[in-house]
Image 1: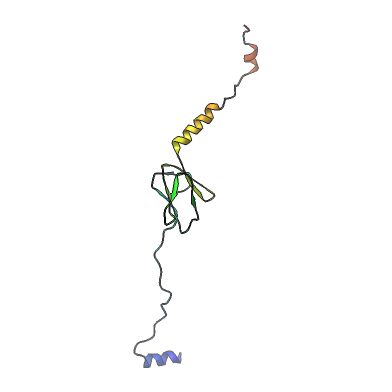
Image 2 (image 1 turned 30 degrees about the vertical axis):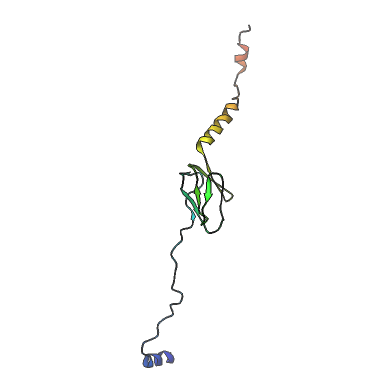
Length: 119
């Protein structure tokens, strides 16, 4: 208290508060930009990151600043920090092939069997 009074009397200017910690950096906007099961186009940025926290899978690539982007259009899949872009045409063809090989069960009743005319 007494020191402040003397500094006001003797000092050319009154002392101000310390501004040592008043600096801040601009935001980096890191993180996921597209999420699981979203449709992405070729060149879309999927993840902005520092270091290889997420790894690129099929259909994705990593830039020199560790940015992961889509190499083709398709559905985004993120599983265990592996980012992949699934090709929709190939996925649909695969599902059609699977369904073609799958025989649907034949539903029949006893009445249909009993009323069948024997040859």
